[in-house]
Image (cartoon, rainbow, N blue to C red):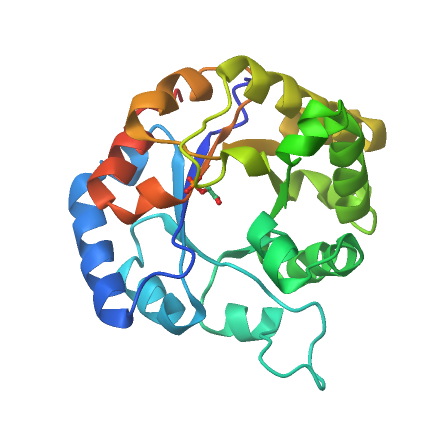
Length: 256
Ligand code: PGA
């Protein structure tokens, strides 16, 4: 990893976190993390919409970023149930996870929508984390690269070259999410190097600077060897992030 790419460890709570739980979580996490200057990685949490403002307040000044788990690309309109970028920035949210495989799978999120969401997030001053990854069938059929190429190219298509490096990409093989079946460090490295090369087709500088995370069953006992891979710039952690102690241990295994 080049020295400019500081790793990032981001916890995705998914459907978890009443305001009471979120408050308790944030307070516990802050007692477990070293001071911002001594942290081996940037840290963030992705909370449900209803707890975002509370997390922003609780974590203010701590250097822990607060992310939404989705965002709509339009500023306003007849899109019942959706939340815009401006609604997130107004309450101090730092970024948004976009295109998580669960949103693609259960809620019909499309690459076409992501093409609008990623630049809309950047335009509003939010840091987007674009998720990509193949299913088990696609991997077995030798389709991994085709799938990743499609998702990365579509998701970044409307992002201007100068802003590409502000996007974070999370490579999350669907067969590894919530299954306990973590990718081997070699698989993670190979896929993430491929994702980086795809960004390099747009801009070599951006490819050097962009962060690409691994996600899928990251736990305290497997994080270190994955995070040690040269192209892996951190992790998006689901299940294990719900326990602040486990999450802080994963942060501690990042190599600065
Ligand atoms: P997991 O989820 O760590 O529970 O596998 C990862 C993710 O979905 O971001």
